[in-house]
Each structure stands twice: as C-alpha cells, then as structure tokens.
Image (cartoon, rainbow over all chains, first blue to last red; front, side, top):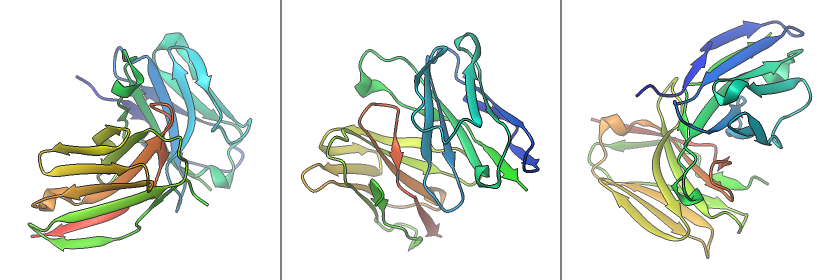
Amino acid sequence: EAGVTQFPSHSVIEKGQTVTLRCDPISGHDNLYWYRRVMGKEIKFLLHFVKESKQDESGMPNNRFLAERTGGTYSTLKVQPAELEDSGVYFCASSQRAGTPTNEKLFFGSGTQLSVL
Amino acid sequence: QKEVEQDPGPLSVPEGAIVSLNCTYSNSAFQYFMWYRQYSRKGPELLMYTYSSGNKEDGRFTAQVDKSSKYISLFIRDSQPSDSATYLCATSILAGKSTFGDGTTLTVKP
C-alpha cells in the first residue's frame, strides 16, 4: 500500500513568489491534515480536511496560505506571496474515518522542505 | 509557555541500554497521547498511541501516561542502533489535531 506522498520534496523560492505544495493521502483516507515545522520550533497543526471540506483551519497563519482538497482526494497548499518566515518543513498526514475517534491514527508524508530566500 | 514540553536531549546511550523519554503537558483536556519516531528527512511515524491514562506495551516499547501529573513517558528496552532517531511526543483533545513536543534526538551506539 502506498503511503502519503508529498511533492516537491524541496522547494527554493524568492520572497514574494508563489509556491504550491501537493499531498496525495493514502487511498480511502477521508481525513487529511497539514502540519508545519519552522526552524527551531515544534511541529504545528495548520488545518484539517474531512473529504473535500475544511473541518478546522485554526492553525493557518494568515491569508497568504490557501489549502484545497479537490474531490476529496489530493490536497494542495499554496503560499502567495511567500515570506521569509514561511521557510520550514510542511508535512501532510492522513487517517481513515474510524468508527470512533480512539482509533484514528495519523500517517505522515516525508514533507516538503520550503526555503524562502 | 508551550502546551507540551519535551526533555530536549540529545541523548546518547550504548546498545542494550534502557532509554527513558519524557514529556509534560499543561492542558488537562488532552486525552490522546502519541509517540512518534522520525528518521532524518522522513516524516513522523506513529510508534505508540494511548487513549487516557495507563501503560501500553508493544515489543521493546512501553508508553506511560499519568494524567494526574500531566506526564507522559516512552521507555525503550534493549535499545538498538536502529532506534537512533528523533522521538516526538504529541497530545490531542480531538484525535488527529495534535500538539507536538520539540523532539528528543536519540543515538544508540553499537
């Protein structure tokens, strides 16, 4: 079974440019999460999709970040325009819609390393 | 103040040692407790998952949760060089939306 796939694995862009990150969750996983780790900080929650609907976007830093999940399958995270402080590793994770919350387990992708110069 | 504080490390132990990794948390509403292992240039991989207080054992790994003191631990018995990685504790109120510690880097020397 394929795991969570993210690409690109690395992206180097200049301040003010636009970058789009993509995540392909495990097939059949309704839940999709974006997390981010900036240098020297802990991994932080950004947002949560259930199928194509945004369930919780309380962690999105500002309106320069836009996440979409087309048809409840893959998801994209666009940063426009990128700022220096957006540099970090962006992780995507997915999980099945379990019968009870106690059974939900996250599977993470390898992340996209974003460097804004 | 961070909601989850993790012993920073780094930690270096000889092969075969018992390893203890620890975190404290501040929000009493947390009810899901996880330990992840992360190898270099990879994403976190779920190692242990506990709902509420108690102990959970899986092979050489034991996770403990003490909600009264808001303390979570991971013990690794008979540590192996392949256990060398960064270990992340995480907690959540709602399953899936997790709050992470900073991570502890462990090196097990042959």
